[in-house]
Length: 459
Image 1 (cartoon, helix red, strand yellow):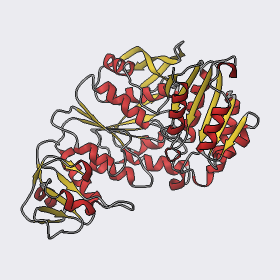
Image 2 (cartoon, rainbow, N blue to C red):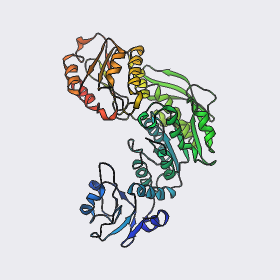
Image 3 (spheres, rainbow, N blue to C red):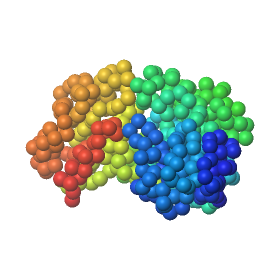
Image 4 (tube, helix red, strand yellow):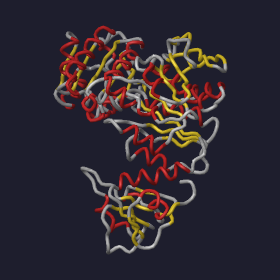
């Protein structure tokens, strides 16, 4: 946090009732398992958890409590509020209001976590950066990121997710971004939104309350770009991988021998060559988006190049491992949506060898779930996937569409048994090197399959 706050300051601005003496604090916890002496504890409450249950066990360590119901037996400062999740947001807003650096907010359907990591990698070459850990991008994760901003930070990069209308608007009210980006709009969370147009509208909330002192970074490759540009009062900076008229664009995109891409980054500051250390053409698009954000924050072109060239691999996101018997494993198990699966397939078939795709169900696709899984089966077949293995009731439709050389499994044990008996990792399985991509939505837990294959095929 930046300096210290008191419950009375927060209550004066946001309401609620302060009970017992006031509380001066500079650190916040929402997890009773990791409480440190002198912190305040916010008792969050949800469908499957209630922090109020743990108050008695941590009351002697904390200096104050944020609760929805007063505990009269605990005589320490308590800020009693109607909703502790909203109270977390109020505290986050108070800390953000003290921050004089540049705050960049990022949302989108696919790749927003990768873009966030890229922006942070660039900015840290210019000064200390606070940024979202993992993909903690909801009404709890975003405030937690904002609360962790300190006096030392020059920049903050905040990832924002949405499962409904108003989610992004709420997060922006707390974060007040100086620069805002929608990376892209693709079929994801259709169960909540219904269609692509609704997703674009919900994501577009990130631009609507920006002022003319702030920057809207807009993807010209998106069909919704013109609508977003009209919706904002902010200065607009555009980016594209195909349109040279964009402020920031990629030219001369080349797949190098190491499986990664190089390109010329074109900007108002000039042109500069960039060699990506991450695989996948989709990461060129992510890099251009990150460069546009950094450019909008006033970062020099050479620093942008340095930041992109020194990116680190994120676990479970297009993570390439070389195993024995000439097998390459691509672990992209963190999550899956139709757009991200297609991008991963493109990366799979770019690698030389026998292309094996192991796909589990994609979640939250609503009434279009069957059709979108079938689309993936057709896409994989057309792209040149050689063997297609699927897991989960929806992925069955992808296997059916793929046709010959596909096989469906009802559970992980059945899939693992097949992988063991099929001798995929044996030298005599194929004259070609094997390249295996594993992909699936978070709830399918496909990292279990990935770890098993790594253990079997470790050099």
